[in-house]
Image (tube, rainbow, N blue to C red):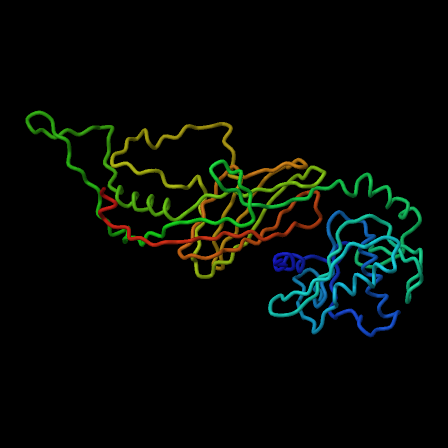
Length: 383
């Protein structure tokens, strides 16, 4: 699993009930009970914390307040299986957590992931500096002992409210009916090696003639002098770009409101192209009438639910979904057309936000293109 999008997002967050940064690795192998109890205490504290989203401990990261925290790296990792045995041999119930070693920006860091789970969790025997039957919990950015009333509410929260939360899963929607929801979409497309569009001649058809060879001009019909240029763009767009929609599925048990998906797509070589479906070129006509440029005015016209912006480093895309009921899926109404100049895979690191979530859901989607090349000739424009 690629943890880069998650780590990138967490580095900008502050320590609290869902996050802690550790510059150095915990002492574990060969350490005495008192030293090892510090790691045990932190895992128990996050497992018992009052929160609605997953918690993380990033090891090998130096916290920087009100800015991006710094990855300093570590030289050794803790074996997950040994850590699982160490923790869960001492508690009243199994603790759900995992230790994952990963490389980020060329440095090794450790990621301890602790999902929301049943509580309270405590030691059945004293260990190191920790006491049995004591509930340790994360309160803000520090660890404390739970009060009796908090312990009583923990069991109630499990059944009543703690598990009633949205669980948002981003996907790409493809297919003729948009029912194909995938993490990775594959397309075949054609890259038309373009003519120099600006150098194409104006279109000038022969004027129709009437009786006695008299030329006839209609006051309502006008020649589209840009016909060849418009057709070149129309053919290029249709051959290269493929439509997708963003989708978010709520696998949780509660409504999600204010749902927004955002992705920052790296494209330093400018090999990608994104375009809204509303900007898709229309099939060009050799002749046009003023009526062709009149669009009906709708009082109920809605703003696009996708925004795209190109930067020097790539692309930023935002998609808006509003409310998503539990077990429901919403798609953007606007289509997003995407294309590449060469065959390959483009990763879309996405973050999904909602009013009910204290931190975004981070995931990785991808687009795979198989590209063939063809020449766009003058004959194709005039045929």
